[in-house]
Length: 251
Image (cartoon, rainbow, N blue to C red; front, side, top):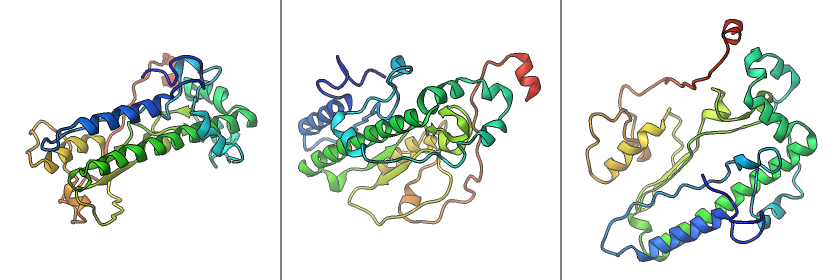
């Protein structure tokens, strides 16, 4: 996943800005008569794992300034009572240890939240500059744009931090899609999964999805059409854990 800073934190070019600039350079070099696929995977707002104990969230200082006056509030489930309802093995898990590091005191909570949202603000700025480059090349009317993430994130909910367990904040992800030529805004509330992305992109390119792909194209939903019947109503989420026998028995 790399590092946010090449050297001393806060000095030089932030990784988010560098990735955006490399994407812009790519778009400027794509021959106008050739199709392209740009997969841009930002690190933000992931923590810097090596600095978990000292400085897990490392935003560009210019975006951190925008959040200095913000007072953040804990999630309604970030209470001792909610934490006490968890099984013992989860209370002793890495997700709890990271909660202590990031959110264990009010001072830690405010500092982590300001830096986390500053990372997202930097991401928003970078995406805006990439989209401006798409506009500058005259390709916006013929380009599909997909914004999503690989996971959600617990910001103290249930007294935990991280992304492993099956709580909605940690497993629900954003998915925004703009079809070529612009589109009417639709708020689709059907369950979609990341396995749907490949079939959707193939469909937009006019190509059939291999039978081995488990996902389904979202193109019809993006156009406001009724969902194919039947559409999924539930799905299975799994995260493997190595637990002592005593923990599994207590569960």
